[in-house]
Amino acid sequence: MKAAYSIGMMRAAAWWDGTLRTDLSVAQVAEALRSPDAQVWIDLTDPTAEALGELTETLYLHPLVVEDIVERNQRAKVEVSEHYAHLVMFAFRLDGELTESEIDFVLGDRFLLTSHLAEWDPDRSHELRGGLGPILSRGADLLLWALVDDLVDSYFPLFDQIDEEIDRLEDLIVARPNSGTIERIFDLKRQLMTIRRATSPQREIFNQLTNRELPFVKAPHILYFRDVYDHLIRLTDELDSFRDRLTGALDAYLSAVNNNLSEIMKRLTAVTVVVAGVGALAGIFGMSEAGAAFLGAEAPGFWLVTLAIVGASAAAAFFLRRIRWL
Image (tube, rainbow, N blue to C red; front, top):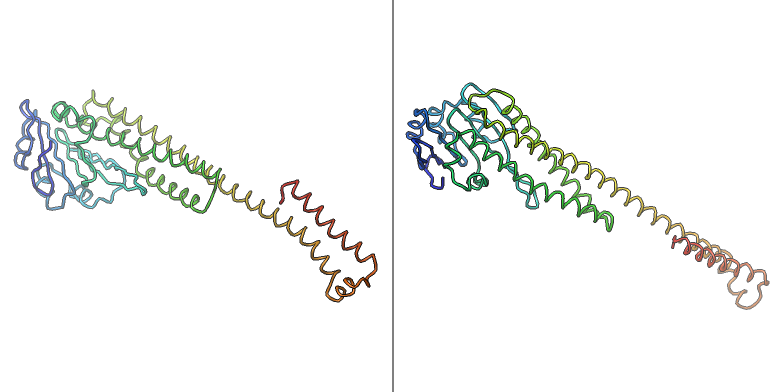
């Protein structure tokens, strides 16, 4: 379904009388839905309330559903009514910063409505590589599966990126921790919270689709949605693993910082020990005694004490060097 019909950014196609028809108008969509064997897909890109006006009457959409689609400020959810199920899911992209895009699906008995921003293109679904006709001919519910399966599968490369980033942070903490490391750890924690907030409720979406008897989900197709549900369980487990690893990385960073601080304190203590000897020498060999000492008027005991202090300082420096405090 490549061509577009302009009502906002609407594209409509139908499997009708054994053929795939594209570029349908709203009136043709209504006509197709009156046919008992037609399966219809309406795809909207960033629709306005006005653009949804005619479709509201054709698909019998509740005003609250239309409002949710237009405003795009929903959480991931599924709402089931007598005539359709409204699903809200999210697409993600990680390019330095994590961005999310809301996608609305409305599944009826013989139609599927999708609404999204231009960032997500349903035509890229790997299930549609063989064409729209073979999928749509088997039902709108199978088309929904084809789209959400590709959407959930797109999370795996995202998780691979996060996994690699955590690996890099762990290596950096061991080699050279710095303030940028802790900032990146907290950035990743925020990203994981965003992903979890969107993906965790999606498990409930597919739990309902697979465990409730819905008239618009054919019994043979429930198995397909269970596969998506299994993928979401795996992703949720990976999220828990990422969270634990980041917590461990944060603990390791704090330990490394404390260890570095201990090393600094040891070195400062060692310097203090050596300098204390020099300070003692300065106290004995003060300005009032310097002249007499250089003239040879001081008793030999003065020089003995001086040599003892210098020797003790040298011995302390040697010992501290041996135990790696210097």
